[in-house]
Image 1 (cartoon, one colour):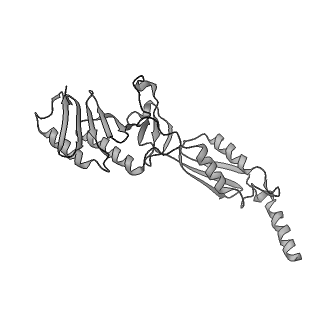
Image 2: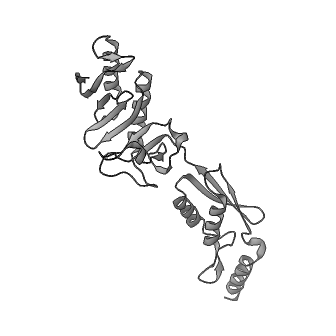
Image 3: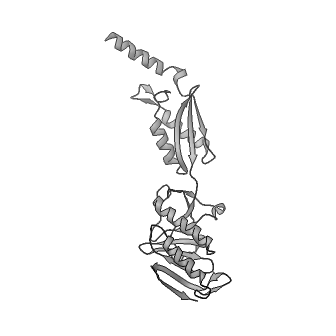
Length: 250
C-alpha cells in the first residue's frame, strides 16, 4: 500500500516537472491558415488541469484527440491535422491543406445575376471548405440545385458523383464544347451551359460515357446539329433518352 502511494506521488511529481511539460507549440503547414490562430486555439486546450490536479500541458498526457478535432473544426480548409510530441518540450502541429478541384456555386433565381452569388471551393471528396477568388476561375463550376446549397464545412456531393461531374466537364472540353458551368437539377440530371448560350441536358448517370459517345457521334455528322463558328446553334440538346436525341434549333 505504501509502495503504491509512493509510486503515485512520484508519478505526479514527474508530471509537474517543467522538463516534462509542453513549453512550445510549432506549426508545420503550407500556408493554409494563420499560424497564430492555430497556436492560440491549442494553448486554450492545454490550459488548466484534469480534475484540477494533472496539468493538461503534460507532454505525455496532453489532449491530443481534442486538439486535432478542434483545429480541424475551426479551419475547414485543412484536410489533415496531426499533433505530435517532439524533443525539448515541443508540441508539433502538422497541417495539410485541402486542394480545390471544383467551384460549388449557390442556385440562381430569376432576379439574381451570377455576380450576386459567390462560389465556394470544393475538394476531391466533395467537401466545401473556403471562399473562391478570381484566381480559381479555371476550376469546373458546379451550380447547386434549388432551393438550397451546402454550407461551408460540409459535404455537398458524394465523392463518386463529383468524380463523374469532373469527368463530364473534362470530356466536353475535349470535344470543343467547354462548359461555362454544370447546373445540377434536382431529380432531372445535369445541364451543361455552354459558351454562346446552348445547353446540353444529361441524366443522373453514374458515368456519362454513353451519353458523351452519342454526342461525339452527332458532332461527327457535319450538318446534323446546327453550328456556327464551332459553336452549337441550338437552345438545347437533350441526351437523356438513350439513342433518342432531341434538340431545339435557334
